[in-house]
Each structure stands twice: as C-alpha cells, then as structure tokens.
Image 1: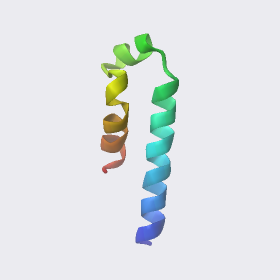
Image 2: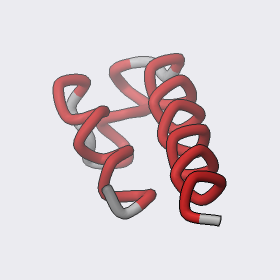
Image 3: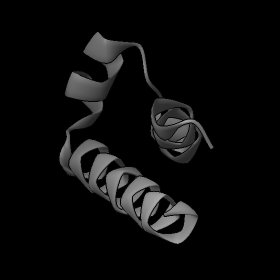
Length: 48
C-alpha cells in the first residue's frame, strides 16, 4: 500500500510540474508563482 501511495504521489507531483511548466510567465504570475518555484509548489501540493 505504501509503495502504491508513493507512486501515486509521484505521478501527481509530475503532473503538477508539467502543467505549471506549460504555463506562460504571465499565467504563473497571476497565480503568484515564479518559474523557479514550480518544483517546490508541486512538492507542497502533494505533501512531499
């Protein structure tokens, strides 16, 4: 179960990173996110 949860969290993290990475600088700015913060925002979103 723990391995399945870890894999699920990793997939959510990657999906979040990919979605944010596809956004323009303006879209990110509207969300209050800098491009350099994408990975930390994604980690926080899945609880890493």
